[in-house]
Length: 148
Ligand SMILES: C[S@@+](CC[C@H](N)C(=O)[O-])C[C@H]1O[C@@H](n2cnc3c(N)ncnc32)[C@H](O)[C@@H]1O
Image 1 (cartoon, protein in one colour):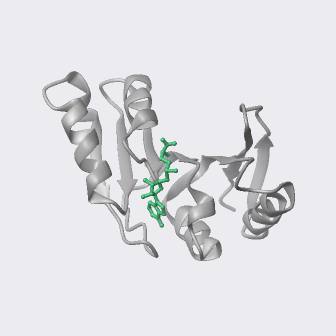
Image 2: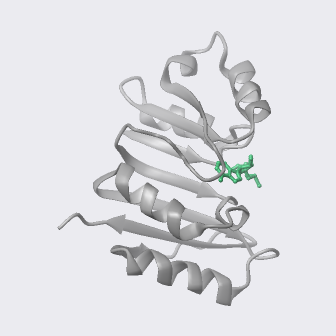
Image 3: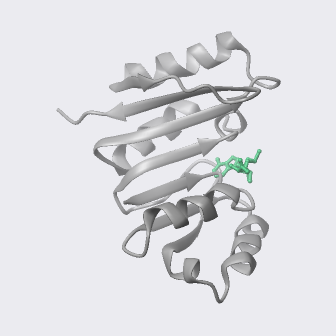
């Protein structure tokens, strides 16, 4: 699989996903802060994971990934984005048909109402709810992009 760790921060999940995708897969680790990507680079330099992780520095209003992906992880990231509609539309453009988005948000920053409003925006552009996993101290949802 080709997966995108959106708002990857220091790469906690990028590294774990790089293990999961195996040698034929790829993780595109995306963050707008160069310092975060540098941290990942230092962690993987000289390891087998180095070849599986592509670091991508984006702008705050433009993810800018051109490759199609099977899966997007957005862990504790979406609430930091002011214009969620623009972001979600861009994510749809990079997801393969039947691609998945897994969004996890912190309960202490994101109310149930805000989370549900975010889900409504995702459903409005055609994403379907697949699962609502339980994640400690968090609100979480998995959605699928079904290309008609
Ligand atoms: C709270 S941290 C979470 C980091 C990581 N996902 C984790 O769970 O460890 C949020 C990250 O999202 C990044 N971020 C915020 N807005 C962003 C945007 N519009 N595009 C890309 N990254 C963004 C921040 O730079 C930061 O590294």
